[in-house]
Length: 460
Image (tube, rainbow, N blue to C red; front, side, top):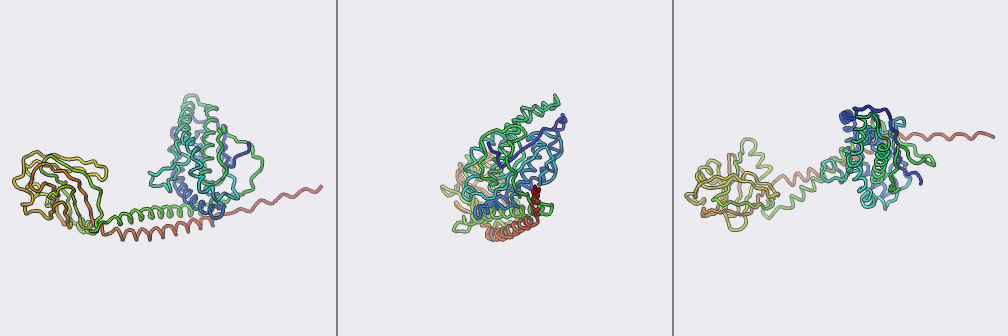
């Protein structure tokens, strides 16, 4: 069996403190903060590397060494904390190699990578390994999560080493607490699962075309390497790292701006012939004589703000035409005093979760259309220009009889949508240009060391 190009090695440093593992999550917070930024940069650089490999067949060396550094740093923190708990030595704050630290990770630099494989290996070909790694670590090595606000294309690293690794590390922690010893057989098994997970992480991150082997190589040391790779890693100094991280954050903000711009544009295109953007229909109903909304207070600067942001408001009902009216809350209260009605306490779009407050009483003295206090009325549809005051909307049968059931749609003109979409497009261009520019500057700031001179052959 030949050595795999991703080499994960470690040594168990004994004796270990019995109780230090209880607070290691607290001690590692500075690392978690730095890694959260580094993994944003990792994701952005991986996207850049994807296109570089697709068009040139090469992984840019400076990008490769930065991303290897992020994986290396992550592995050291995981080894110190709850990925292994196998050392009490605090991890160094560096992307570069730390050969004296008990956990090391090295990845051979690939001179060429397949242009075709880059399209499928990170999602299709790696699926079997994702299932295994999910069992080992609850997806912690590479999390494909669409619900995270920090996810780029669904890929984001998490430090919640769980699954089988977390369970076995917990057993090791309890053994440490009560016996002062880390079970060696348990350590070897945990190392094998971590090694498998990190190999898959490197493969999914496009760093190698060598498919991860389906074997659990236990223990701290791997198979001996037959030859020493000629690659001399690029050194990313503080200026290079800070510039790349800052550029990646700007690029990430640009991607978020682009996604928001697309959503706003699609929303703007849903306008109807009247220029309104509406919600989905929500079913409401009551066996009483009227449905009302809660009081809406519009005062001070809110009037101007709502007119500029919301514009005109429209309420529509479906089915048989119903009376819809908007009036000051005091007038609505006086009209419905002693009348059986229900107030909509919660109207949630589009969940269908509607709750009501019920008020007992009798029938109204007269139909709603005969009242003169309404600020706006309509039969099946009402349009209202926002005005200051305390307001409430009422839906009733036109003749004032009981039993009001309908589907309600609320719409507004939202005059700012078009301008917001344009602004977001401009922001996207600026953020992406600035982010990519800073990433390139950070790459240029990286130092490529000169190769070691060849040793002269001694004369015979």
